[in-house]
Amino acid sequence: MNVLYLNLAENNLKEIQEDLFEDMRPSWYLGLNDNQISNIPPSVFKKVSRLRRLFLHNNRLEHIPSLDLFNGMAGLT
Image (cartoon, rainbow, N blue to C red; front, side, top):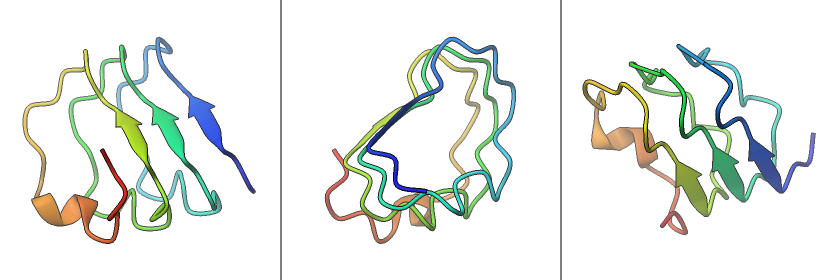
């Protein structure tokens, strides 16, 4: 599925499935802000390497598993 902007903000999301974005290419903007996400699976963003903007603010993130989570996303700001 080709999606340029996916806004999942303010949806009361508590978790992200590891394969959620597997079929989304390319994705440029991904809004996951203003939810209740507390954990990010280590390879969840593996298939969205063209991601330019990732919004994760206002969640309940306790930690990021590793900076490897963002490997391959050279354009991410």
